[in-house]
Length: 130
Image (cartoon, rainbow, N blue to C red):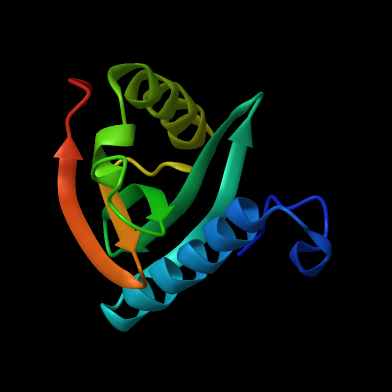
């Protein structure tokens, strides 16, 4: 698994970034416990990033992870807007072109983590391709 991190997270001072990395690590542990293999962490295409790409057999899941301290500003899942979805789909197309296999099935999931409690929304949206 190759991480897209360019710097050492232990040196980060912005608490939001540190919380985001902790949330992604929690999501990785969760997906691994369900039999998935993490094939990419922070896969980047230009300025767009897919937090996690997981594989379980022929199922490839593109996962957006949102971590929050609380729900004062709504559910973290609400932050995955139409614009964000379009960006994720564009980046996923690049991954599929580079690494996809003919038998692969693709899905977009969201994982929300609020106060360390994880909520997994499988098949969160469908882009209408393949």
